[in-house]
Length: 90
Image (cartoon, rainbow, N blue to C red; front, top):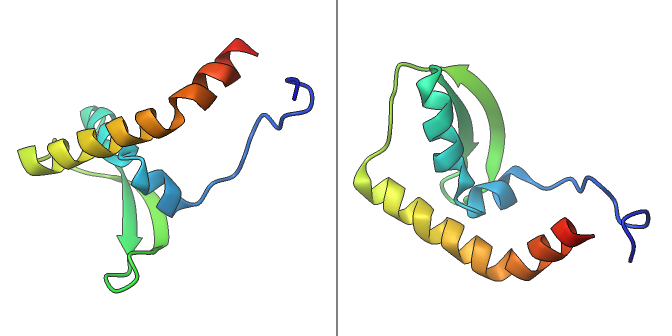
């Protein structure tokens, strides 16, 4: 499939985004500016039912949250590295 055939944007769910581990990393950057992305999640189903940006005084995360995020990001990169490389090279 050439670049002309492949869609440049593919909509994904908030839940899939959360699974990547990127939420914590993105929020760490946003915290510098006093912003955060909030995900309201149903505790029983673990499904996001609302997501929105907000202003916050909160800065940073605890070590356990950071570590879980790093594991999720590493897993995402491991599972998707070939496809990401292919997309960059097209």
